[in-house]
Image (cartoon, rainbow over all chains, first blue to last red; front, side, top):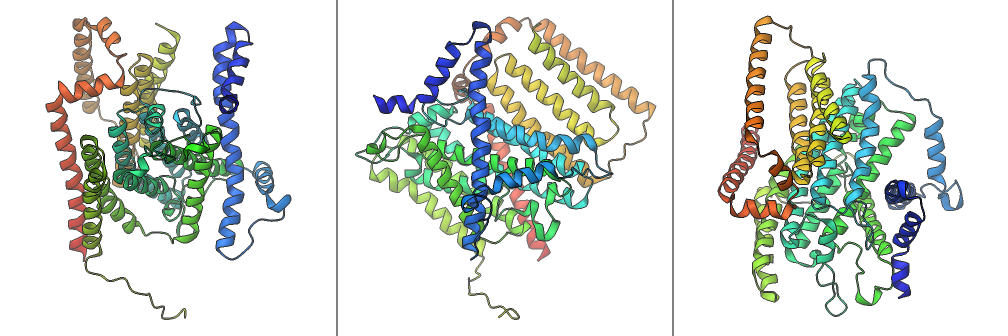
Length: 393
Length: 163
């Protein structure tokens, strides 16, 4: 009973506050109390993540990372924030003033919109709508427009190149992103994120048997989804739009001070949102991973899973080098797209076969087969060898 | 006429007017995006959630981006000099389109029924698509798949030729 009370503590507080406010403003109070926590929590998470990322990357590159401001350097984002605020805000003389000004605002706004449909705990979602998944991807589509606005409005060739790269990349990877989540929609039979989480609840013994990641199509779909999500949030190894060694900083080259910070914020908010969606679609949402761990509140589980995925993002960033543009496009259209299509096919078989080991094997066969065949065809007979450096060694 | 409707209609109209009158083509495309978002808001206001969101996803996410790409990849954003003949043709065509739409709306008479039906949950839309409208859905699906495969094949061909 007490565990349930702790689980629902935020919902209870909200209901109590709404109940004790005057009748006329009750809807407004309810809205505010739903939205405000998201506006506080996720930017704070952004601050913490920047430190963790810089420290993690530092360790991977055999250095310390930030360790001067505050205990263990954890007040670094505060210092960075103050620096961004008091810096001069420079707008290029040839820039399109209005478009240049609106782009970062639109980016952060659309990033925040995406959180409206992500359940961060039991009964904790801002807008529990029928077509929540469509809402999420629609908000993501608006993000592309804001990135283009930033690149074009700056009137700088590097910005424009970066924006073109970003938009081309986001369109290319949006197809596998949406297609891999369609498999989940097919099995769950709903576009509503809360229903998708409900469908994955329940345990088999102590194991979370119904999580979609533990099915052959779900596992493949999850991996494809995360790859596409990395590309959507413009993170390494898909960070060509802001490749600093080629085009300075891409679409936000001409932004300084707080607007630059807004772009930074928008990028991380996008990453959190899409990781939250991955948790919702494949990892059981806010559900506990083992049946005897259900006493821990649901919102802690959601954020634990979210941070685990973020850790994966940071690890990948510290490990893989940046792709080339043609490799990027080939990977999206020749590998990711066929793989997501076969994942949908496999999910269709899964839907209509009786459960058991046979179903698992039958559904895994097309995915593995296509992976092997496609991998061989795309390698084109080349062999991977240890690269020898002529001048560096 | 409710307040949300008036606000959304104003946004849609302002966007459309700006899309026609602004000098720079990219500005026009962005104004068109505003107009399309306003239209999506109107759908949502009517309770047609899926249509409204699909409107944003398809028109803002794909069509506007396509227009912008076309502008950037073809020529500079200098506007062409206006010609009288072109303007007259445009006026005639838009008058015809407006007449047809107005006639369809006035003679349709199903406006009340339609607003009730648009509140249908998304599962109903899905069931209708999978049963009554299965043939059009399949045809569209086949067309899109063919387009998708065609795009990949074209990209592969180009690669082979350059080698």
